[in-house]
Length: 145
Image (tube, rainbow, N blue to C red; front, side, top):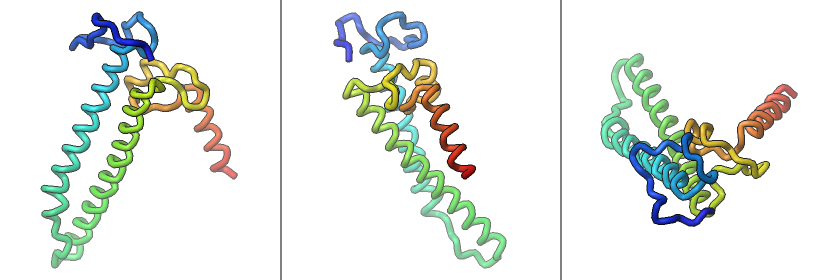
């Protein structure tokens, strides 16, 4: 991981795609750390709001069977969404840990750069585009067996 210099400061208009410096330099790492932390805050806020508003107010014992089924379906969907978000928070935490360890931005299979554009689109990515494609092809082959 590159050492930060006094001139290495993240500005509001910073664009990592236009950064001509070293790949995963301190400013770029700070950009992704902020992006990940903001995403995590948003997910946790939504989760807290859902627990406070939706899940606690849900009355599953409705007299009408159609209303009860609808409420149970909504409740189950909300729980699945929260579970997906919990898993995403774990991935965000792992990405933040990789930033601390100086491993962020590098493919965990090949060690190659994941690429700034891919990380902007999917900040929790752990595989390069090529490794991800190979992984998906391999999954498809084994799924068809």
